Every structure is written in structure tokens, then in C-alpha cells.
Image 1 (cartoon, rainbow, N blue to C red):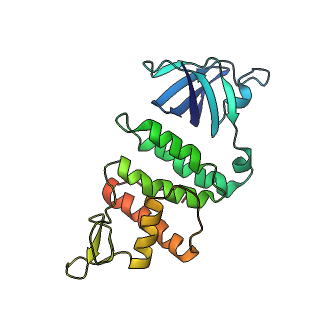
Image 2: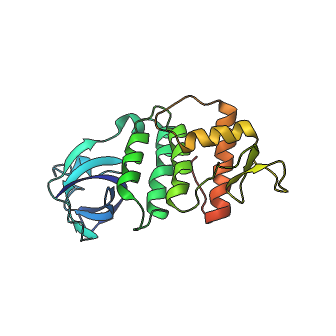
Image 3: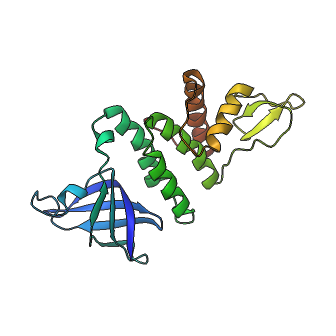
Length: 215
């Protein structure tokens, strides 16, 4: 079968080849790109970090040789900007360190590809890390009525009748909820975005012992 795959990590392999770690709608795979360190190799220019390709995939083989590879997007507009690469790396590192076999990979793959098309990659990375809490089993809950804010330790909105202290005020909580359910890129107030960045970094550190680097 032919599948799309996003290269989230590369590694030199033997004398002239590379290992390509790709994320696909079916999960993570390792591809051996034979001879691709040679500039004359047809796969040289598509065997790069942060590159979207299509290739022949055997879903039952975690490691396989790269075959029938076609470049879909090399994300040059991102690669030319250091800050954009830094923010894209937030997403790619999460693939490597957080995504496990039992997740809804097709949905996550499509989300990642959509977010990499956003003009503001910092906003995209923030949105992704907020949305990813659901897939990882640490989803955010906004169900309580008459909420006054959001609590980091419980992952829920809080009311004035509760003893819990809100870590986000109501305006910040609305911003968090907007990104949690976001479907298209939108504008967000810089101070709200900065607060949500600090919040989501603290949320991952508290619940998953994971340090979000680059956001």
C-alpha cells in the first residue's frame, strides 16, 4: 500500500544510508533509505528532517526499506526560518517521545499536517499540545457551569464554591477552550497566548513529567 509519512527524525546508517523515522496515519515506522547520503541518489532530497513523503508501506513491519518514495512537501518556508523550525520541532519531538501505538494515528496525523500549514507555527504548536492532551488521556474538561477559571492539577474548570484555586482566569480559560476545540487558524491576544504557553508547559510537566522544549 502507498502511505503518506512525515519524517520526524533522521539518523545516519552504515556508510551511505539513512534511517528515516516517519509518522503515518498507521503509526510510527523506521525506513532504511539506502544510499541517500549520496547527492546523486534519487532519495537524497526527500530523506530529510521535517519532510512529508509518500512511500510503499507494509503496516506489519516496524522497520523496512524505503520504496516508491515521492516528495509531497519539504516545508521550505518553515526550514528557512529558525523560529518556525523551533516551533515545528515541538510537534515532531512529541511524535518521538509521547505518541504510543494505541493512539488514533489517522486523526493525529491529519491534525499535524493541518497545523504545519498555519502561518503562525508558535500558535500551531501551542494548539497541538493542548489538543494532544485528549489523545494522551489527560483531556481538559470545561463542563462545569458557573466556572470562574481552570485548575491545572485537576484538568478541569472550577467554580467559586470549590476550594480549588484557578490557575487560569475566565478569559484565559475561554482561550484555552477555544484552542482545545479549534478547527481553523485564528487570531489570539499575545498576552493570552503567552499565558497559555506557560500553562500547557506546566500541565505536561505536572501530569506527564514531560518538558515541552521550544515552545
